[in-house]
Length: 241
Image 1 (cartoon, helix red, strand yellow):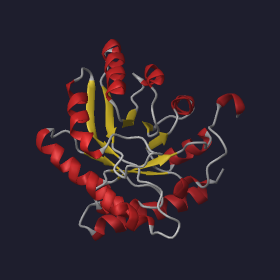
Image 2 (image 1 turned 90 degrees about the horizontal axis):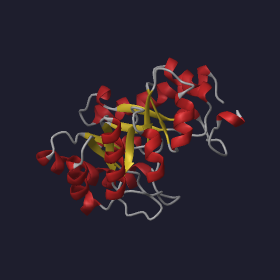
Image 3 (image 1 turned 180 degrees about the vertical axis):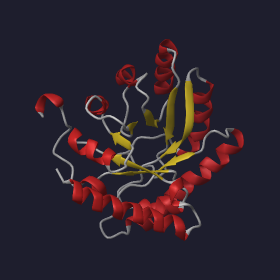
């Protein structure tokens, strides 16, 4: 686990990258929310991140998120990994923003559980802009239909779109490779806003390509390695700590 001084340096560097990318296209850096992806890292590092001003933390796995949520106060939590229907019941009522909703059956389960609990579940629709079979997300052409479907279901609030681009070839510039995909998601979001004004967020961009995401209008960037260093070998578990 990295220490406070190194994390502070990494955070300053990441915020400077966001600020430079935003300023270059006439955006205000404060319009881009930095989400720290803490998967595999211990709660002690999550708490340190919150102390240094990273209010939003994200996990890929439901059980890891819920375990750390009990250990960390003052954070807003996000689920950015694939969500299985049998895990929905564990998330409802926890005030987690789900970034990875990509199919009607998952929408139905979220709505049913949220209605039963009398809560509003916030979510983003994940779009597989790069048609990468290794990534989740609906096809770009299915986005409007899925957004409309989710908006019509009880107790759901669709707040925007999310994407994860394919891994670029080893010799490629990740920023240049990702930029047209991020542009496509922004264009889709802009079209949707004419019909659904509340669909505002763009969750896109990670450690290697956040400059492209910010240039194309990201409102949330999800940064793990650049902040917290290399991931561990497996998910953090309280019983193994």
